[in-house]
Length: 325
Image (cartoon, rainbow, N blue to C red):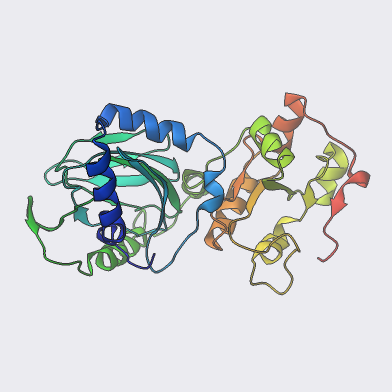
């Protein structure tokens, strides 16, 4: 798909969807039922592997089409937006799987939507959904009947004015958000380390030791130990974890780096970083996200929490080390 707006998404499939609806006479799903559908689908396995990121516009793909509803996955890089639009005669629901989105409606307070908190609506519901954060987001959407019509709007004060075609609104908003994010937090422009750490963690879906262990066991992620050698000597290591000390981390995982590790082939790789207690690792994971590794995260509590949970550890002499540094 090449078009940047959801209107393009509709045009691509409208003839097929109209046919499916008229021939089946299917019972339409309520917003409450659609909520259950997106929550169930988002918690299922396999679909996340199909998600991609696109810098020019939001990536989206229809993952299911039935006579009474369809399901879409959408990825959002920072600054990407739908613009104000409705869904014609379709009811809908969506849930954020990872990251954070915002919903804007005329005259209403901005709603920040966190993972696992679905939004549902009936026909003719108009809103603007955007990623105003500094990290990518992924969401699951369902519509009933499947989308056949959408209308786009411009905001005039607190009123929505229909527009004939897509404008450059999304790009304008993206530039505004970059300017807003660049404003200093205080008169000196300085941030405390606690503020920097909080901002980094707001971008991450941090994992418990058990969750990190499960992801690594399924070969879905790579565990990366960024502790210096002195700490590893005292504390031990996690079996199978790559040892990549903090000072070379970005060079080892940037797919464009000439000194990258063999495993760092694309930006979809899930890198789970850990340090001793889970502080430096949060900053490191955010740095990897800045390089486009949008699934990078860290372990809450670091190595100490892993050990306290009773998960396997081994002395550092048996660990696989990154010898390229």
